Length: 346
Ligand code: KG4
Ligand code: ZN
View 1: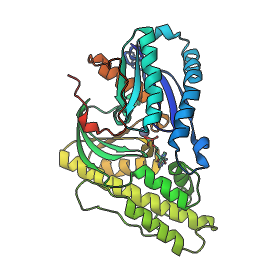
View 2: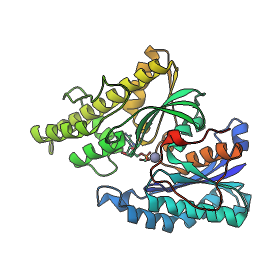
View 3: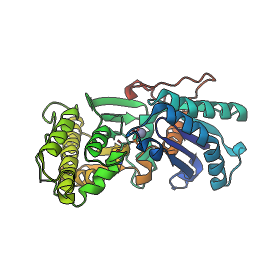
């Protein structure tokens, strides 16, 4: 089955074709993908402007679809089903992909399914070289969400903990802005941190001893005060690298300690990390070290599938279509949607 995946929940227009026959042959299942990032469009404003995002998705969807078909050497008649991101996300942006996908499926007389964006992230490591097996603990860390989930099976997600305020990616983005680095902040902070000393400055580890929930807003204030009180924080590259490294280390340390706690609490031995922040190399390395100590393993998607993309939507859609699920003709997007509300596969 060849499934077209469409991702338009925020500032990336991602399209991909997942082919289950390739997966059966032991390959990744990904026939092809195209991705257009609106980063430059929003950079001037320091964050995503929803109306501009929707308009740009509309401009890009058709040309990207044609590019994808050419890349896969396919005609649109060769597509067997369409999966689009139905939520959570920006309502206008979601509607562009949903309407495009639903209409295309109607015209081709094939099924369509609306996919939960975070389920797309959660399942993306299954497209990687070292896929996990259910059950596992999943740390979902993106620009909008920080969640620890016990994933018992597809659609059986138990939320163990979540951020009570800012998401981890949002915290990276805000710290970057304070350091004068361009949007999106995560990769830029990580790059600056490469030459820094992660123990140079002491930053808080919020809610470390309080269950499995997270809080990152205090971290934001702490970074703000550190920058304000540290001479050279705007001019001296070494000072700036030390601040970035200390900040990154504080966030990673907090995430890792909660992951270890979640694994111990559930008795599970596999951790999956997904979402934009799972691209962070310091996070990956620290998890590998710490999980080895408790005989657990960490699994993640290939780097290009950590941030938003169409492949994860195509794959999550495939799994649900395969189980007989599909959306009717009405297009309804869900901007706020809890992953634990998803139906199980059977
Ligand atoms: O999953 P994603 O692409 O979009 C959302 O669904 O939000 O995640 C984007 C977030 C941004 O906050 C970005 O700064 C962060 O992921 N991010 C990173 C890295 N790459 C992306 N954060 C830390 N280190 C990175 N290497
Ligand atoms: Zn995302």
